[in-house]
Image (cartoon, rainbow, N blue to C red; front, side, top):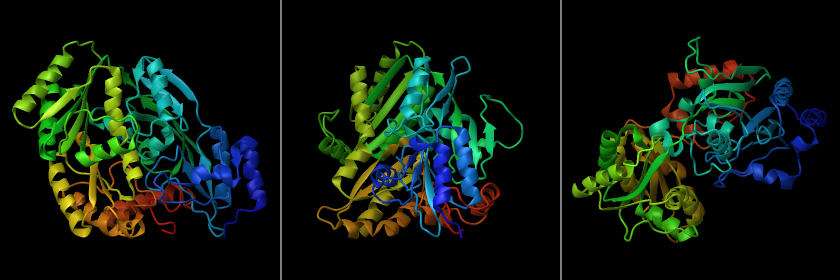
Length: 478
């Protein structure tokens, strides 16, 4: 049976030094609480390595003694994927990437950046911008989430429509395997047809196959002209029509297409200081769309205005506003990025991160709203997300006056119904937040059989002792 003895703890401490070892409960607290408060972790200490060499030494030692390793980035995940559950029988140490924070290189001519996994996303964006380039991944948590976590969860964010998820943005990785070997596939090539694309095994693996220490990612030209509009629409079906028309008429200049219902906006206005409604009156549904180009195209504003005018004439748009300054653009995006935080302040919520084909989004929202109302009379539907890539955050806020614990106790029952609807429409029960601890049962239910058998085979090949993030994606004793 594995045992985390004082001598092993001392060896681990010697690897990272005093600055890389935390065992005071007050210091550990921020690493052990999941953002939504669903999970409270347990670990004897946190390790903060500052180099790939230190990560390799940690994993070699933990592999030798069969001690679980839980990788953690910025701890902004929503499914408990970075929370340790250590017990005396199955000890787990949390290994934070926080001190792996170097931007190793920016190659403006090759449009690439190489950064360590603990780099905060906003810092990666800033390093790219300083070189006149764009790193397009953008999330509400970009001021605190880290690159390694973004890669491990295959983050998407608001620009997937144009730039894709992290699977499309990563060119190469440096990964420490479970036994401490370093897999160096840190390439900056667009073409490298030499067998299996090994980096893809670790993107979206949630730390279950190895510890990502660095990545080389794609960069893009900085946009020189950006047009951002907030648009009122009567229904999700109308939003789908606007999206299809925008893709057809504005082409690849359409870089974001977000949506939200009125209740979601109301909660932002209620709970987020400084928020203001973009329009004079409410609307059942809202769209935030952005069009951008690296060309200095002064006609883009007029082109978008003319497009929205045509949409209004056709009846699929009822109102709208175009940001006339950078400050107004930031204010519109602040409304979008504040939606999760606002719902959190309103009370308990049961959340679903699902995807369906874009054309099926209105059908999904109708069916899921009806099902939720039948199961939980009085429940409030907070729906928003990335319509351009078919990703909906279909969230349920507890009915007014409802008991919080009783409401949350219905999570599994409600989620199975919502997930069944999404999968039945050709979608997925997990679009961008991952599996973590929260959806282990759902993965087995919806991706069982051969797909799950193949995942198990990959896990056993790369981590035969099951020390990497045990209990995530699969049951701890799978």
